[in-house]
Image (cartoon, rainbow, N blue to C red):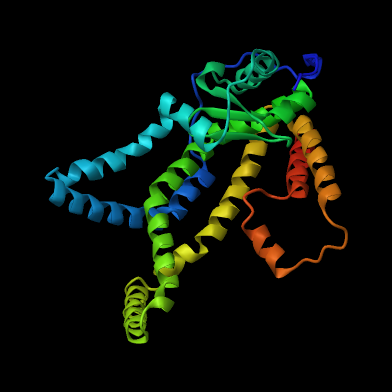
Length: 318
């Protein structure tokens, strides 16, 4: 699809004064730490599971069990390894490199955003996503992705607001903490899905065998609940808590963009998103229980909340 002519960047707000440039300004705010803490039960279960598997494989193969276990523990560092990030960008997130024309439109905007934030622009990798939506993403240690539709339709200043938001996810630790949590919780999640699959097969067992399996499982569950003072049921609430923390991290990333001076530009993009939502929503749609649960599991706050927070930031600066 041919690209439209580049939009002049006259509307890009300029940074005032001198800013100290660092390779990265990466940290971990409370939302990043909260995400890690909420996944701790899954990570602990994964550690126990991988330990058992490593011990069994070590016994069968003759390899030291701690070598297999240690390789998995250290594998999280691959999140910050550039070649592995490129594989993640292509195969997990479906991204591609920008074309030369896309790069000419995207690179100057990114340089302005990173310069204002005091970050070296080359510290992060810019990627494109083929999509008809206005969106962007921050992932792993250095990935920043933008949809092709965003690049075509947004002005440079509006695009800068979106990129400043994604940079906030990186500098505040949201991107790497969420990916690490997902990776280290993966064995426990796979084991849980396998257990649910086995439970669905109970109906095929003889009545006596099924009763024995259910009785043993029930006894183990009661014992675990008693021993952990009910904390064994905490993972059932984890998806709702993780979604709440994720919504908070989105507001923190908005604050980062606003702190760099891109609040009006980001608000303009959100107004477009609200108009699209209003057009796509069926009139008279009831607020059902299913929609309420879906809202609790939504990883992004509603557009109205984001606009209200950004407007409050602007009002406080006046």
